[in-house]
Length: 98
Length: 144
Length: 363
Image (cartoon, rainbow over all chains, first blue to last red; front, side, top):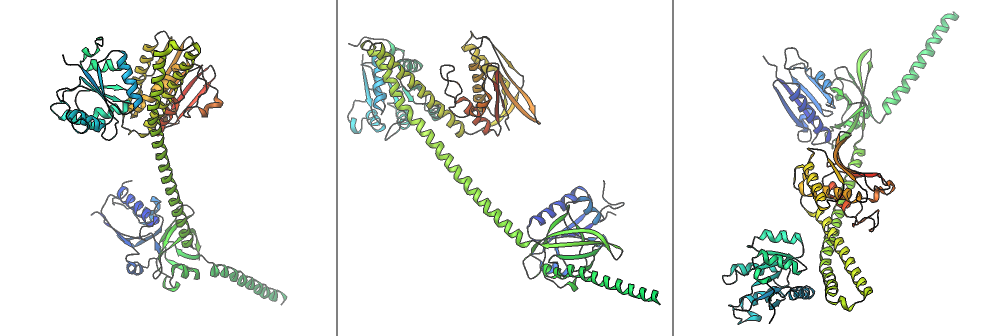
């Protein structure tokens, strides 16, 4: 059964860092991960309560909710390898075809 | 045979004199009527205003028409001439000062006309009237 | 007994040194204005210094044991947006070092609050952009006005020129018998000067038109254009011994009419300046320079002194006087304008009496 990734990306409005993170993430998801995923983008300016609940300190913060284990990355999503590692996207029997 | 005459519609005195000289030197036509702006031209051709009561049976053999005229410009005069039954067949030679102008005029597609780049010299004039088929204008008849 | 005292004494000295060392480092960390965070290998917060409270506008206690996240930086450090509930978001410069904390892999994260610096940078950028925009607008308006003025003046000069030329010729034709040799000579010079002026006016209008006309880009066969221009020259002066070497199938993307004018001027230049030589060789071809296509027109004619190279393309600039070679000097200015409108560059190389080569790109 294909693994479905559930991701949440916290950004701050449309700062250059937020836009860059979104762009990088979308690129990784479309190029490296061919399986199913659901990505929710949360703007801390619009939903501060959600950010507080998730104990967000800074953005961009990317949280992998499913599959377990829970993973969190904070900072620059430019380095594809590091992001994949951090998200455990190098999965056996998963969707990654390198 | 009715006396053939020309009409020259031109506002600049220098251009008028040089043109008259060029034509006169080569015995072109007996009479050249000079009209100095667009309004006077329309008055003449339609016997209104200044030329009220003119005999409209007497129309020129050819009209030399400058495009840039005060009051009413040459294009407007040409349009009116072409729109009227009595005048639409009068041959018109358009006087332009540039190729650019000529291209603009071409765009108006106002019927078959001939063009002469100013200054009007005899050579230019002959070329233009030949294009219009008015060869007889070039026969050097002695002025009586 | 002595040994024991020494050991205890040594232990005391050691302990004291350790306490002092600890105090020093504690001071540095406690008083650092930058936030210092230590996380374990997975990103869980082990320690946060007091400055972090100010940077994040939250109490440190609420974060110990919580997930900071795996910190990723690009190179040395990364900019992040600091989330601080109750305040506007800030901008931080995050620096990460992998180290050890109590013998386990850890991340040492330093975050400097650069919110004010960023704000100042943005303001400066905005001011500069506005300034640049204003200057560009003013320049455009100025250029348009100059263009309109140049056009209307050139245009209005035609009529009086017509008069001078027309009446001079009329005097020549009708009254030359009333003039002596000198008089006729003077009159002749009036005519000639008039012709020159008329040519200048036409040139200026042409230059003006090049600027004002709309460009219509398409694939243009430059070889074919060059060939037909060459044929035209040969037909006009069949007595000249000249060889045109035109490379086949050279095409370019651009406005056909403008490119025709440009090639015509370049080839006419070559034709003119090889006029005094018994034979001429004029070449049109392409070459490559740093991956870009470069076109060239070369001749083996009069050439020019390279030290005047930058005067070549100025409007009405000439390097020869009118007795040597006729012309008003507008040809190359037109070439430059056309090349510029296509986004390219033009330059020349030459040597007196050894020939000239004009190179141009079209993008």
